[in-house]
Image (cartoon, rainbow, N blue to C red; front, top):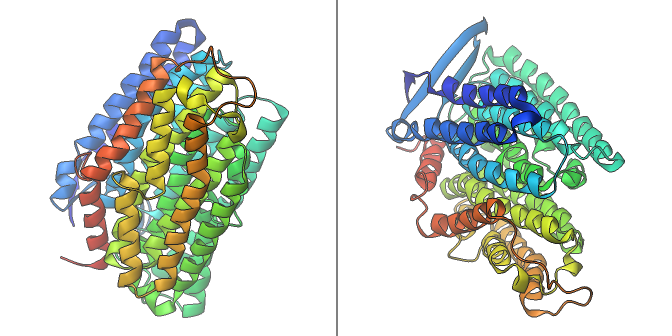
Length: 497
């Protein structure tokens, strides 16, 4: 891909950093202005990111180097197709999450809202830095910015449970970060290089046992944030956070950043050819398959709505990793596209959980009988997103899962096809009863006579993201060329013209 010097990546990153500073300076005294900075920054950031799409579709990369730190490694931003895909998703959904957050935090009259919006802006700064990082070192710096900035969000309620959840979150992710540093050190020692390259750059460096060790150290390190089992426990515990944070964790930034980094290692550090020679792809596919099936069964057993959604996220993250590990054109395409498809659908589900909590303070599945009649737009959006995650057309989840299934056939691995189909059945098993009970079952406890839809600040993002899930399913290139960029990324990695 042709490299072009451009300051746009730096401008996009600077937007959220400046917004964080302005939010902090504005504080509680002028709340409308504080929220205004949040909304303005989200729109400007997205506009800058979207302006990069034409150049990437033309086969170019956008680069900006700040400083060379030591031979072979610079503090560099490099926007390729895969990085732009993640950045477009994160910046787009940040707009919806920002609007929703205002309604949620005001609806609950939450304390420490300035800290919340400040950390929220920093988190998106970290996520975009990960997307635009040109090498492992730059990625790691922003990876840690994301980790540290989201800790106050997880512990926002400052209850004993929230602080405990935040500490567990840090313990898991900082331990993973230590392993990432170790793997980066080995990588640089072997190759003298940390720069991402489509198809990988480690082939021909080091012995097979050492490369296998480095690979699994990377996977465990980044897999902690991607919630691969048994490294997942922090994620359900973190559901103690406010719902906009849960949406940020699951759909926009944290776990998506984790799975993005895992795919960077698979496709841009090791590469398909080296993974195939070492048979590492198969071991990773088994790990992902285990996570897919076990997390689906855990989700089925959860009565707490956000915990059920959390295990569903673990399931879908593992699906993304499985698709990439198959190393087939359709598998990689479906894997990357599912990052966006799942993002739109899962953010809708968490938005719905938050709207229900704001209006009713109910958090358990068995308390939602009949709520669909009181909150029809909210629960209809839930139904759209839940069925989409299950792979039912015309939602976006159907396209991504169709390509993932094709990927398993291209790799001639029927076992993984059955894993994907089994996962879809589990999705239906734990989502459809919620939909049915909310619309067709009468409440057994207190009915919802005084309950109606949440404020427009919350309902509008819910409905827009649900509609986005349908549009992305019917016209996968209509929303920011997501499918075309995913296909381009797969071709670049596989060296297909």
